[in-house]
Image 1: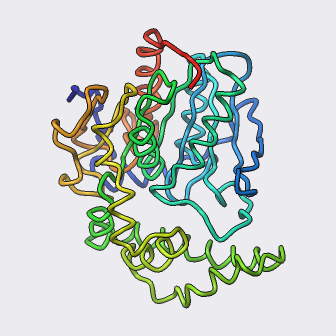
Image 2: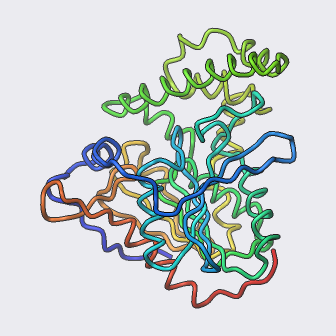
Amino acid sequence: MLIKTTFKPAWWLNNAHLQTLYPALMRKMSPPPGSRRERLITPDNDFIDIDWCGEGNQPLIILLHGLTGSSQSGYIKGLQIALLTEGFRSVALNFRGCSGEYNRSARCYHSGETEDINFLYQTLRQREPETPFAAVGFSLGGNVLLKWLGEQGNKLSLFAAIAVSVPLVLSACATKLDNGFSKIYRENLLRELKHHVLAKQRHLEKLGKLKEACKIEQLGDLSCIKSFWQYDDRVVARLHGFKNVQDYYQRSSSRQFLKSIEITTLLIQALDDPFMTEEVLPDLDELSSSIHLEITQGGGHVGFVAGEIPFKPDYWLEQRIPEFLKQHLSFACISPG
């Protein structure tokens, strides 16, 4: 279902790059009030850190960040505060290695890795079998969320899900980042990723996990990598059991899972997103009847900044997401999943 959007970009942030960069560079936020961290040991004896906001028995929203992000990203902390104000608790998943401490294996996270979100969901559902749950994912986290929803079908007990700025076709998004101003984003992201990989190798060596460290060492010299096609072929595919980059992109892109989603889901995409092109957007016949597709003319990548007064932004997602959740909470029919 295609729905009409209410988003109007701020006139003083009138292009895709300003929309994308302003919140990323200019927004400085303190931790949400009453936030606390919990560490969960995963089935493979690694760990994930999750950051809670809110107390009591209010509905619980699981949040998933984007590539090189964390629970400390401005869009996560801003949404946690907005959700708290509207009567929701939230728990932000830090993908492996993103919480400020490197994880214990060469394995990390990627756009198609859904084991950890499923583990988190099952853990929380066992604790709180009657609590209404929902989930929100941004960018890579949105791709993970949609893929997981499609994989699980009717096995989940969620009253709603929301995915924002999703790289629905990974190959097309990787190519887009090789062109024009988008190369700036690519260079910054790759610099962070390559640094992370090498620092993790040193961390694993210090832990005495030499077999895991060797898996990274065998990737070779990463300094020559200039594109996501190269990085995902050399690093992601090799570390996570894919044949090559094409296999990774094909199996992990979430667009192919949209028809299988049974949870009420809002998908928000901007036409001017500098991380992708319009060809990434699905046709309506690719959507299940549970998906609400909201396409905005502007907004950039995880931007969506509104407001009439310069440097006094309104972060529209922090209004739209709680609004959608409140609307669909009343239809929730929760049973243990």
